[in-house]
Amino acid sequence: MSSAPGKGAAQQVRRTPKDTSQGEKRYLDEVAGRLLAPLLAKPHSSKSGWRLVGWDAEQGLSLFLEGHDRVLLLELDRLDESKSCYARTARFNVDARRHFDAGTPLDRMDRAIVDRLVAMVRHQERGLELPERPTTGRRSLVRSVNVERVLIPEGRNQYYVNPYVGCTIGCPFCWAAGRADLSRHLEGLPEMEWGRWVDVKVNAPEVLRAELKLHPPGPVRFSPVVTDPYQPLERKHRITRRCLEALLGSGFTPGILTRAARVLEDAELLARIPGAAVGLSIPTDDDRVRHRFEPGADPIEDRLEALEKLRSAGVRTFAVIQPILPMKPSSLVSRLAPLVDAVRIEGMQEFEGMAVLYDEAGMSEAIWREETARLQRALFEGFGAHGVPVDEFDDLGELVADRSN
Ligand code: SF4
Image (tube, rainbow, N blue to C red; front, side, top):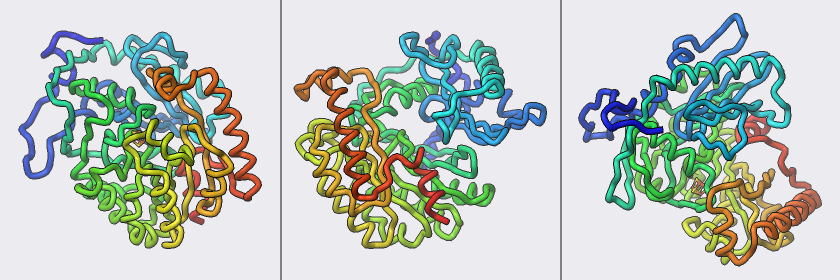
């Protein structure tokens, strides 16, 4: 996947000196733009009825196509022949699915457009030579970057915003780690351990303000996995807060998901945005378990207290139990049920090192899979008994859309 230094796509991009007053220019979109050039030049095809509504290069490459009363999501991940996927190119695994409706399989019309796009990627990637990644002696890096796009449309007038890329909370199970590293590779940045690097989008609030004028209002997800909007750096940089201020009075509705009780610092602001919703990820009721599996995240009690206070401030609240960790389900249900409008429950997603993590926690992966299924059933029944809807939204945008009317 690599070529000699100096010939790679990232090196071909003209480098300009740092803007020291703000941040350095980020080249990721430029590099990804080369790969997608034919599509970006003609994002709308009246013949096929499909339109590219949005794209993103921060977690591999993601493309959102709208047409024929549906939205398709194409994702380009690192080439890995051990993983199943829709198609493979010389450099990427390509996945495709119905966005907002993952349970419906692709039909012939969907597959026709996806196949055309896979053919385009195969053609374009021939000219994409990825650079050898430089090494770094640094153990951590917080980089201030200037970006040109912040509001990412994902179809149906729904959007998402990543105020940062990277997350110092650094959960070992974080699904974003590998995908975000592919994006760093595309840009020619050194490999660094997940949790030890963050790009701070210092100009995001100003860019967002301008973008809001160009799109119809709708729900805006903050924290679609490649960062946590309230990670510790938010206290210093306040990028998330300033993005929320940009949304104030715009008709756009934020839906936030975080593992950090720090979101409370914006409770008053959030209460002033009609329909705003905040979710806390709370994967267990046991803080010793939390400490083992997500040592960089806030204590469980702090997150429960944040939900309670947000609710008292008039903000709509929900919880995401992901990944399901060892717990007493009846205890978590009784603590959460009075504090939330809805709950989503998900098990651990596969990741390299998963067996080791379970091993260190003193359990085998196989036994834990069975236990997860049991806990999931108990949680469903428990929340059901309290009248709290479970898994009735595919994503945060849908939750905000459903409940902001
Ligand atoms: S808080 Fe979220 S984004 Fe951050 S490392 Fe953990 S799972 Fe990943």
